[in-house]
Length: 263
Image (cartoon, rainbow, N blue to C red; front, side, top):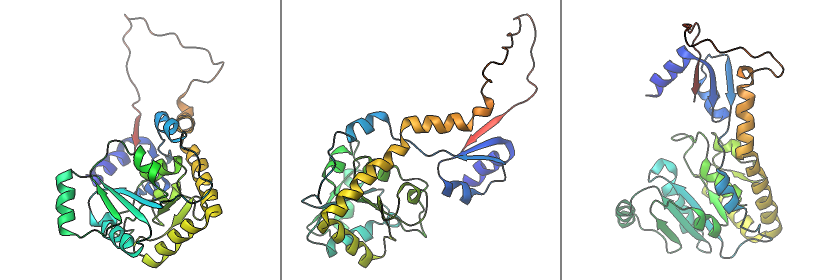
């Protein structure tokens, strides 16, 4: 399917919009006009997230949250191992799967006492409100995130994040400023960073504030601004004379077809 869609875009599109620089460079399509237009958070989500006060110290209890599909390549086994190695913290794993599928997985994989599993949640706000840190442990050589909306939502709440060092999600995070870029299989590094954020309140507070500020760059207004910039060459020039519409009795013909593809 990806090959088919890329072929269609390559042969029919005059302009390409990519959701991240990672997508643009990975696809490497030859089309000359290409822009990156990052996703945006809904205004309603931002409004609710902004109601949460920014922390002045590391939260207690210290809750580490991950939300993903129920696939090993998304880092689920690594999250289990991380929780098991840090009994002083609490861990929440929200899986995009049915309650039955989560129960089956839990019966086959013993979860440590400090890890709570949740099935698919339509409302993630309570999880972000409880979280101290939100992580994405996808394996970089098996699954590269094209963007990372969950991470962006967490940052809107002022939550420092831990993400893989590659992919679109790495473009959302600013390493050592809004969070950290760490391979999810590097357990010692994850332990070190989480303990640092738990015990260094001033550092945690600075990163929390930076995360929310960074999320502002992905507002609906910024999204609209990027779209206008991408299509400005199609907009009428201010002050240019208007062209009268043809009479209904006058036949018209389309002499040029322009196709836009969004990747």
